[in-house]
Length: 227
Image 1 (cartoon, helix red, strand yellow):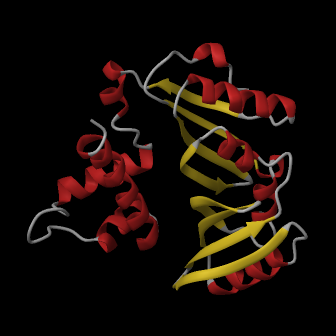
Image 2 (cartoon, rainbow, N blue to C red):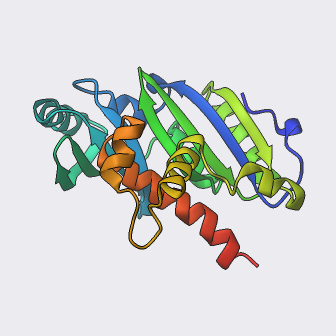
């Protein structure tokens, strides 16, 4: 569990944790059908619903079967494929609120999901909370609903520590940014492209694009806007 006493006061707090897919509603829903790699994009509250956007990577047949299986879940009110690429699709899914929903708990604790990804029946989350009180709120939610997570890392971003965390970058975002900078991706003319970066990292072009965009936003936002 996430022990609040391990968190010191600071500008914000980064919490990295993993848990089995069956431990929360969305994990169960997206584990339906074939084994598909899923990465959360963002979550938007709409009335009484929480609407996540996520990428799913697999071959076309598995993605078709995945869609059918998710739509058949009783918790799901809608599933829409917004973008279709070769081997990857961007979905919007809405499901009825559930009192034990991990995602709902993150939402109520003002947690911002930097990364939410499934692999091998488990999910890894990197979440930023605005302060110590928000982490405590989330910890209490986990305790009350008997949701057990494995804490991988917790960092309080005080003014002195912030730079040490590399602007809230996840390891995957940092890796693609480093490769992009070293390869001349941001130069004119470009020294490398997304296809090359994706091949070097062993991921899809879309996954490389998403990590690069999120990583750039994580670096530029505090530099340009948070003053």
